[in-house]
Length: 113
Image (cartoon, rainbow, N blue to C red; front, side, top):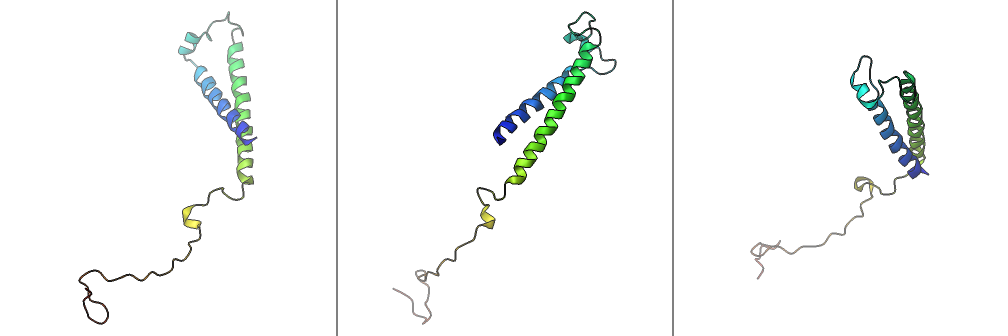
């Protein structure tokens, strides 16, 4: 279920970005290059602006809802699947006696052969 919400979230976010970039601001002349400036369009003279703003509002609402859903899924996870290395308990290692290096004196002062 969480994976499905992630997919919808990414698709809605991409659609919102696309719709916002296609809309033209007040006095912008580049909007006419995409056909939104003609009065004989499919949505009428101001219909495309209303359609684009309504579609953006609907997609923004869906984005908000999927964000809340992802927050809910995130809060339901009690324990991470993999613990960080810092929090893992360290088992004590037994002390291993080491031999002195060649040429070094031991406790009695004798040099090993």
